[in-house]
Image 1 (tube, rainbow, N blue to C red):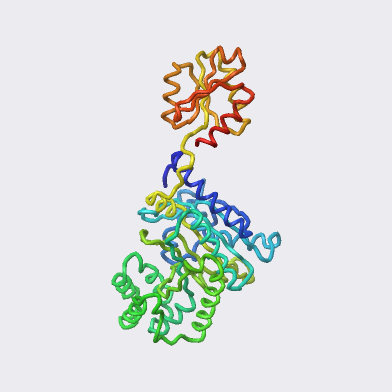
Image 2: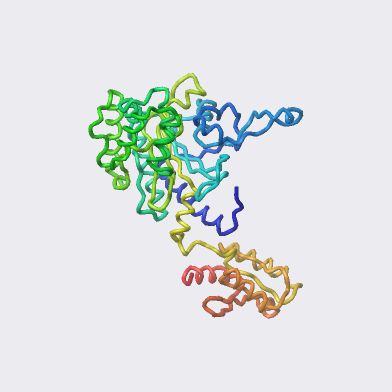
Length: 430
């Protein structure tokens, strides 16, 4: 859990602006949910390992000494969405498209790009089982990444039923399927040897673990050649083909790739699953999938749903390390600083500042009547491009002396037109 200084916040807001703009372009609507949920709402939705990472909130007041918890901080944005759909179904359209950008909390071990408090940028489509949903989600996420400047990302796609069919084919006992997928999901973190050892630890037979690792060691283009999928697996493959074909008509096509090794450990996935990877990051920039049964846990009917979650923190880490933030991203707290020679002139400074703000400028009033050189030095140290000097002559004549620090020029304007002139020069010179 971290503090964010001004430069950090500006970078975060830059990314969030692009995410919102793209998602709204696809017709998704904003949604927000509380930071805390009932503990029972979250438990059992993320698998055993997920349950251990939930930040629980102790009961309050006289019950605090019991050590019991009844609330918990959000673990993700998907389960709260399912609860919202169940509680507000009558107020929402049958086909509901939402995006949500809020923090979540996990009692995880911090690492590069992994934190205990972090923002997720979720986008979900509820009400349809059509493969158009997955194709559009992948296209929207791809547009976000491309507008941020990413070119080398891959969106890997697989299917839970295909994985189930594979586990059956190599001989993994059905009660161990969920546990085996949790292990396979760690391939990019601990490698094939690590996953094989974990499979054995989780009770998977040696022969089954060996066969499974042989399949997952193949290159994506080799796929599952030689493995006979059952009927459910064949339907899953047809679903993957349909998604790939639909996505092929958009810019996401070149980034979308089927990968049989993709597992994703969350237990609520029921169909297609997706994950974004870039070469220089262990782990993913985001992921998601279809979860047709999750809303039904809160409602007496099943509602098909599919979603994608971008990890804001990891995106920021990679963009920072690659120098991807635009140079035009504002770093100064203001466009103009107003300086005065005498404290008695502060009322005039406040009036002038208000006029400049009215012209669309960000304005800082230097609060003390220090030497002008000291005031200008402060503005320069904060990268404020313009200093508006208000002395006795300027006050008497209704003018404003404006210094452009980087250009080392000085101009005098009428106070009524100064804002527009500075704005024009700011736009022209940068």
